[in-house]
Amino acid sequence: MDRTAAGVQRRRMGRTGFEVFPLCLGGNVFGREGRTDEAAAWQILDRFVEAGGNCIDTADIYADGASEEIIGRWMAARQNRADLVIATKVGFQGGLSPENIRRSLEGSLHRLGVDTIDLYYAHTDDKSVPLVDVIRTFDALVREGKVTVLGASNYAVERLDQALMLARSEGLHEFQVIQPHYNLVHRAEYEGELADYAVREDIAVFPYYGLASGFLTGKYRKGATVDSSRAQTAWKYLDARGERVLAALDGIAAERHATPAQVALSWLAAMPGVTAPIASARTPEQLLDLLPMADLVLSTEEIALLNAASS
Ligand SMILES: NC(=O)c1ccc[n+]([C@@H]2O[C@H](COP(=O)([O-])OP(=O)(O)OC[C@H]3O[C@@H](n4cnc5c(N)ncnc54)[C@H](OP(=O)(O)O)[C@@H]3O)[C@@H](O)[C@H]2O)c1
Image (cartoon, rainbow, N blue to C red):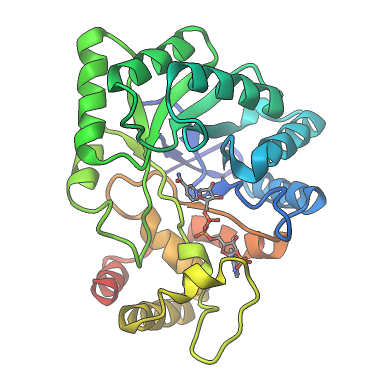
């Protein structure tokens, strides 16, 4: 991990040339009814960059585009676009046909108020469109200067490999970043072949659901009540393994004067291939609770303890 002249941590983002803070801010709460209104979103974004944060993750579909609009208005007001790595996505709405990719990209550029998107993801694999058409369209966007780096989210390793091989055989820009579902209570999807592949190919990895929808903050316990639109998903993790994970997080958090959420995110940041976990905060207070993860480096023993508790 490197630090900027101001002492802020930066991690190498694979082969892309970008460097990012160890936590990427998730934008799916911004502008969503009952979650984070624009004023709160601006506060969260301000606190994030004040702490050295620079990578922000959004998508065309988050709050029907309102997430991108809020980030766009905030960047315009703060005049800080050049300091940020802005990631957005296409594919869950309308798929990955060349026409839909182009239509969605223009919408994202407009809502964000930018000329170029730093990191553009295929949000999900769309098997109804030949992979070569997806790769050629994404490549054209890079050549046209509308996108800088390409990413793939929710791709199986075989499809990712096919996409890279196709791009290489045709001399096209390839996916250099992946965004898988990965956290302490959801490990199998990334660990193993996909992680090995990412490490071998020097692909940057941004795991999403870094907090397992809030479960890894430790607020979901037997007898507790949690008022959250994510509660239904998060409660599902409170089984025997979930209890073991929380106990391990509690123990390490107490020893390190940290919180379970910080320990859970630091564990992710230490996993092979991982560039920076993505997590969202619904309020500025929640974000302030997450940020110290950037300075928390877990020992080999602590990582082994968490690995054992979560397997
Ligand atoms: N590529 C994909 O397919 C995909 C899918 C999902 C998400 N994502 C990305 O990943 C990001 C993160 O996902 P996510 O927000 O769904 O899940 P998450 O990061 O695992 O959970 C975040 C939620 O946990 C709660 N929380 C956060 N900090 C807390 C704290 N300090 N104390 C107590 N509770 C806290 C908040 O919800 P409550 O306050 O409501 O409990 C917050 O919205 C998204 O914003 C998005 O950018 C990508």
